[in-house]
Length: 254
Image: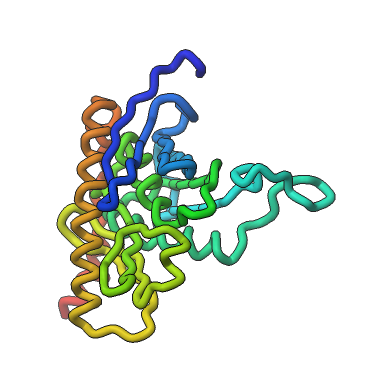
């Protein structure tokens, strides 16, 4: 593993901070894996998908797990067994944010069991990692052969002192009048979630536009990374069209 040469790409946030996406060094047996670095914050995402669906599978079994390891803060778990505990409410909520952005982009009829795991392995107390979790997950899918109509990304947009900021620091968020998470592809906004003290429709729409412009840069970085990876990332698995239920179709049409 140590002799592997990583493939990297990078981009800059609107405030000038560099974000580096790296693949090919860790978890090389996974279908796709990436390391995302923003300052001292490091997120590792891996994705695996079964080669074929189970017999009789009637839904898409996708699981997304986001976890912040104690080791990311240089600590050892304080419980008796010194092991990581179950996901906290915060980690579950971040997992759901990522899930809601990814799930609609898998092809209809794709029923293969798929797992996306995102781990915070190094934390910076002033850089909220939740805004980069979806970027890591989507980048892992982008460098895999799993069929996915992405890439996507998520950013946090906050209005602070009348100015819109993308992925602000934690200290800046204390004064935010509006704080939303925007998820989008290159062309479409997938999800918006957040809170505000009070804001007009115009302010919300403007915040979404600011977020989408930042996301376009992140999506392009993932496309560039996939090009560097080559055939493994560019040639996706074929998905058979789902069988039509003629009886149900007839009932609906009638």
